[in-house]
Length: 470
Ligand code: GLU
Image (cartoon, rainbow, N blue to C red):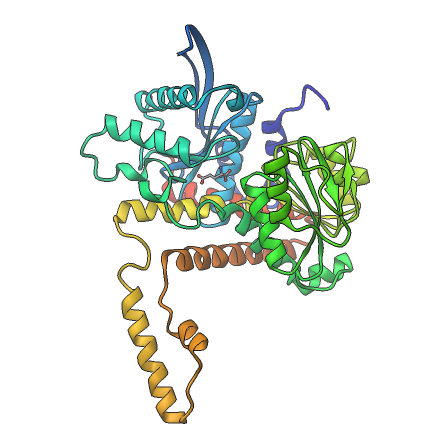
């Protein structure tokens, strides 16, 4: 890998390519592209009897809509360039799925595995208080969420620190998303990114023109899938593909990867890794000692769901999949992207495909501001209505439905039903908007460029309508 590689430059390159298909003034395009505010922090935390200086960041890429939104990652690899790139992707991602937020991202440059929960809590709380001091967090300003290396636990610490410093602020729960349900979280947030990946790929696979071009039948059923990364996103994506009738033939993790042409039972592999500490030696599967070998194994759809740059100039040519679905952010370098597109592979880009997380974060934020859970007001009313309609139909036709059909027909919406159907609708609409844009611009070679065009048009229009502050 080229040590000079800049992830932010790669995002800007894709942006420039797409900008040529839009009609905005060069100044507006430059304003959209740049990061609006960058916060770089060094703060001390006492670990054992030593003081450690922690490096951390928060980047707000765009203020065209507020609050800014984006996760916080904990990883030794975190650096300013990466956080800037990820913040920019958040702006485009939110625009594509019509989530009314600007993009942001945060990161702490630590390996969370090297710290106790006690120390991680102190680092997270100190980071949060730094964000508060600089006004880089707040329900109307900037709303973090989980990302690589963080989850519900860290979001609780952020919330508690924020609430302690903002007593009486009625909207305080909306200062962070991805919280546990008991702390204002929304049902369905945890698996949202994985489910969004599934809905997005399913919609692409339902598109007849697209499948004809790739020489594949429509639909998800029977398609062979390889998922790289069994973290929150990879694990849930793999499970939803399996439930949708696809065959998960390969799974990859740090320690190596496994393959079985007949299909792997995702939950059984997950449990096997939990008990043995490794994905390898799963009954019936072939081991690949190099994790990256699985990326090159035969399949229809490859889902990189871990970190950036895993498919690059060295291995892109060996990829056999016809569709690469970027569940992770930036898993392809621009070089790999070009190689795959030239090979006729359909690359379904990150900034649209993994937007399920932020979409459901938006639902969580709305729930926090409205102080009521989804379905609370209408569930019983809908059930009574449905029961009435059903009994009318039964008396008119003289037929009665059986108990399980009755349950299905009468059921009123719970929070999880509304969140999932909201997410499904969002991903279907976004997919079709991008495919439509691609169809209308036949010179565009790839779906990433088409997605950027959709995003730039929305953010650019928003800037134009706002006007520029004198
Ligand atoms: N970290 C996730 C992402 O990259 C979610 C962000 C959010 O929910 O704000 O999209």
